Image (cartoon, rainbow, N blue to C red):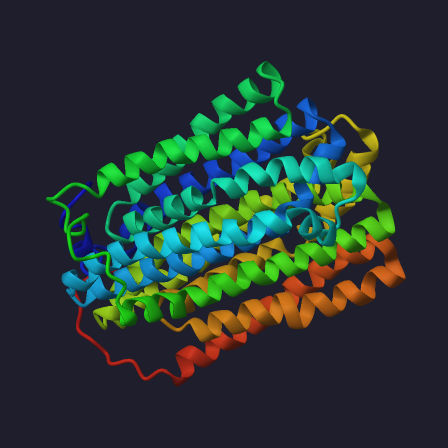
Amino acid sequence: MENENAPLSLGTEKIGKLLMQYAIPAIIAMTASSLYNITDSIFIGHGVGPLALSGLAITFPLMNLAAAFGSLVGVGASTLLSIRMGQKDYETANDILGNVFVLNLIMGIGFTLIMLPFLDPILHFFGASEETLVYSRDFMVIILSGNVITHMLFGLNALLRSAGSPQKAMMATIYTVLINVILNPLFIFGFKWGIQGSAFATVISQAIVLCWQMYLFNDKNFFIHWKKGIYKLKKKIVIDSLSIGMSPFLMNAASCLIVILINRQLIRHGGDLAVGAYGIVNRVAFLFIMIVIGLNQGMQPIAGYNYGAKLYDRVTAVLKKSIFYATIIMIAGFTFVELFPHAVASIFTTEEQLVSLAVPGLRWVFAVYPLIGFQMVSSAFFQSIGKPMKSIILAMTRQVLILIPLLLIFPNHWGITGVWASMTVSDFLSVLLAGLLLYLEFKNTKSPKLKTQESL
């Protein structure tokens, strides 16, 4: 592991240096992960066809739902780990590792056993037509079969990052991506396995890297590692982890519902290719969202540790710096996509009709991106300091109370344009709500003025 004293430095090192130390590896990892998703779609688009891209987009809700259960454990436990480290409670920190392993095992296998028998009707409900169902089914059967591997991989990676090993967490993601990018064209173009080849590449790459992660946590010199007695589920750890993880869980679960509604509205107003266009927009949008998520992952252990240690000035400092950097990232995304939407869409397919459907979607969705970084950091901040309810309010208001009504109303008047516009308006209103909640948090919190080392 990088540095056994890393947890202690979270409370003493300069905030700017810490944020770079923790965020840059996470950003690199998230960017690599997003670029994998993009190249995955490119391989499928060019190697299998435009309808395969639509079939892939149909699977997004199920992928989001699987991610929801993964984040329920991984994100919640990693935040709890940071807070316990700030409190110097290393015994509980080690128990968290064992509990995460068991919880991911239960949820990963359970999700697969529940979903696989009903896969076809689920995909039909998500909007699959007879033309796209074959692609969706072939892809998801393999992905669901390896779901427990995915859960375990992301859960342990979150703990690696929070335990003071951001470089190892970054390398785990990069190794997964590199193996995947090598296997994808081999399986799709070389072995002619079609969209199934892409799914096999995903599961195999994750399984290889998971073995490496298990080895890392076998280091007895690291303050959390595999040992007897940590695998028994402890009520407080389970409840606290799931409570903190409820915010990202609900965000992903709501995202599942939203994507179903988006797909159904796009099919209704534009057909199967319109869903493929959303698949392109989604992949590009998530490139920049994942970069900010990486920044948030770097912020989380710093904010959580210092909040647990009652170093509130440092908590405020990391929040401000994270908002600044997130805004810069999203402005860059906005500028690039608004200037070159046709070139961006053309990367995924040579089908001109599909490109023409994706271009307006890119323009609409990226219209408010300069403001979205603030909302994303605010939501992650509440989660990082163990106040998940405000993070849940942000997620639920944006995705359920605002976006769902807009998706039911706007497309009836403006067709496909109404679908894209719904996302833009919802994002803008969620930024206003984030600002209000953050203002109220700092106005109502009477934080003690602690004397800390020069660190800001």
